[in-house]
View 1 (spheres, rainbow over the protein chains, first blue to last red):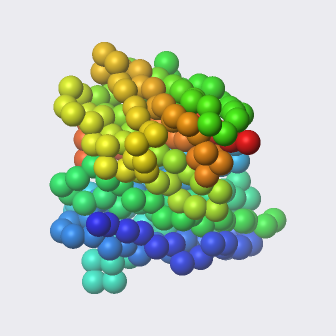
View 2: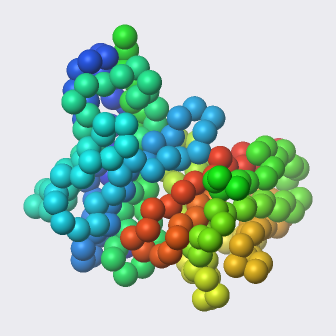
Length: 113
Length: 114
């Protein structure tokens, strides 16, 4: 079965600095990869996904992620962090042929002014 | 509606009672998912509905959990004889179709079993 690892429970960055939230995955066959964000007291919101094609995927709110097949990674990045980016971020993976989407445990991003 | 809605937003129940959680997906979305989010953990897949096909129940943790989707729209997740370990946020998501389609999540139902 597929699985996702988010090795950092917490990431702290200063406003204006670049941010990276790490994600590695394990799946049989081609992966479909997703990033979601959860703001306090709100539901999960879709940020971006990789299905096929260009390894660099651009999403909402200036976020992007790079699919690296050899490293089985899909790290989330943003060139310049905002305080409003502070939230819980989830990476998810599903195989191309089943319905079971596996989410990571989440990484709490805190951006300090 | 504009998004996925869930009710109730919060539910407190006593151990051993049954609870029903409701999900209204986005109109026109054929796929519907239920997940559970426990404190400090990621999302756990529970069940998946796609159109009129038989649901994928592979994620349900025990036979106390069941779900229905009536008329291809509203879904109800039922937990019978609740246990304290069932306390979690239950999230519903819908998508236009299966597999590659983006899932849109509801706000969740926070269940507390005393």
